[in-house]
Length: 388
Image (cartoon, rainbow, N blue to C red; front, side, top):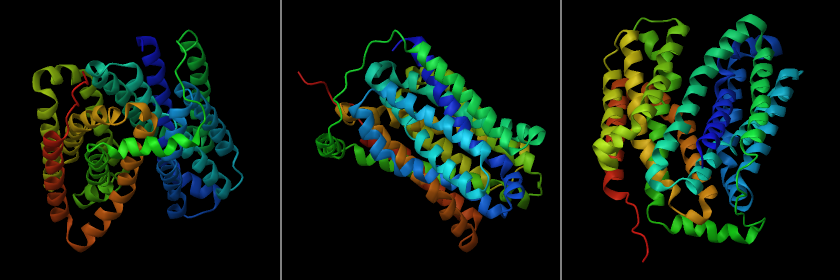
């Protein structure tokens, strides 16, 4: 994979991530415009995330059977069409259905991009390339909410879907140009009989349980906190919603910083120390969160989290790409499904825990768990020796 192709894929995952967070800031406007309560409108986030996770086994199998670039292109076209429907939605039901479609389409892009990187980039250079894709994703998440908020204030919530849909349409053009001279991919063709062997190959690898289990726990412990952060800041005396958004944006900034340092960190520390260090940094984040610091320091804490999260997560992703090289699309789809399921479960776990055992015990428990995950991954994950 050359730099031009990597840049096109990075643009694709960036645009896709804009769709992920673009609804959150305009939920109140949608509620007012479509005559539903805010709680109901907030379910649009679930309408996107849950289908994203559920369809991963199907999309992963398709990625192994057909051209990965073609699958991503088809999903991007569907994503743009969903934005058109969202912008024109006459009622909440239609809007919710369009978000379900957007979640399904998005589910065929980022995991497939990781699988494509695994196919075309040697293991030694893979983590740096994946780091760049993660930077594109996190930048999209970072800008998606802020851009949607500005557009929503200036032109209304429907304009948000017009803007992100237009960016998706431009990305389609970039894909056509960027991959025009790329060598053809080797595909197996559509054959359902390969599903069983592919999934047996994945779960037959003893490392699968560590890779999938670790990203599920990562997402639960770390991203489960995000929906509760505004309330935690409010308890500390900061009630402005804009400040909560700024604090959460620190995660994306830290993640972008990581992408510029990942090559240097790998050469300095190696994978095992990075995994242990990532677990410890995330544990420190949870513990610092119990101190109820002023919001600028909380922003710095989230930036530290974004930086340290990918020390562990980036290493796990590299190992995941090698679980079953002949079924890499299915592997990365399952990886993504585990990650998104963790994000879905995490807020519920923290919500129940905060109300029943208290905020500090839950955060301390999260710190212990995530530090243990980093240590276990460092001990258990390994690259198989090449067969001779």
